[in-house]
Length: 390
Ligand SMILES: *Cc1c(COP(=O)(O)O)cnc(C)c1O
Image 1 (cartoon, protein in one colour):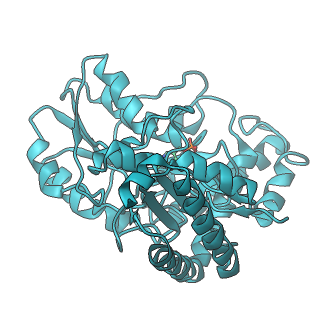
Image 2: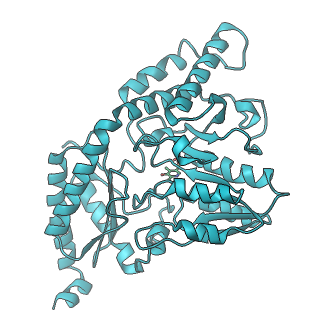
Image 3: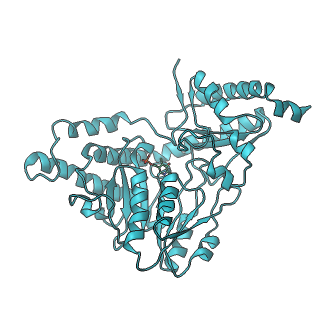
């Protein structure tokens, strides 16, 4: 049976047109971009053309503002630790939110061990950060604010332009982890007004291990990886040429397709949510009803374990996630759901389906049937549920 993949927030398949664009950089154009002979210069040119393409697609003022990295996590680390080290004399305070990706949260925790203090802002029941709370958290010591553009678990989209305006009024740098939005919704750096922005190719049908950090001109950064002078001395190491070419090609295709994919996914998403809430009782939508990623469906079922649902879906040919795929196999409930005020019990029954451009309504109808049947069966053997309904 054909598998139904509904975990696009975790990763996406590489678009065949992206694979095709990458192949010459494994074969004929294999040269080291730092070498001065033709093979090297061809590779170098491919990187610089990719840089220009990415800068233009994001609305950056200058291609030199794009730094290629080994993915989204590395871009987050470079942004936060890079700014923290470069601006240490100015202050030691960082503001972020309680619902960030672990690449941001763990980086902040590491900095706390090195003399920095970090404020983790709460969110409301929809997962939204209050821009006024950001303003109130700023002190004379604050050097950086980092709030993600959209959340990978519940899909809530933050008011980034508003928060970045507040940061700049107070002379504080602003970073956003836009790994879930770049290539998924229209995005323009001129409108967002951020100083730093992270992205990752494998979230928009590009290769894994390729990402980028946008660094606005004039923003100082200390590099994390020492060695050669690649990426304007911000990231040593021979460049992942094929990965960089693939990233740029994938972004070009994703942005060109937004007019079609966004309304398609929103329609599928809203159809699925409406049907599910009508067909299964004791189920709740997580995240904001409208300020959410086009492909994100995050729900919590009472009286069942998300992990049990997942395993049953997998056996029926469906790949999904139980909330956070990044908690190292632990069964701790998601920090995002807990921060939104959802109880431990309810958080344990959460399921995340993230749609992609290749999904169809027929697939979702099949998934709805399987889900309804699975949840009903699991509840029949759940003492908690039996007590509740009797
Ligand atoms: C996937 C993801 C990351 C990590 O990106 P990698 O390229 O896998 O390192 C960071 N932040 C968010 C919001 C993500 O969804």
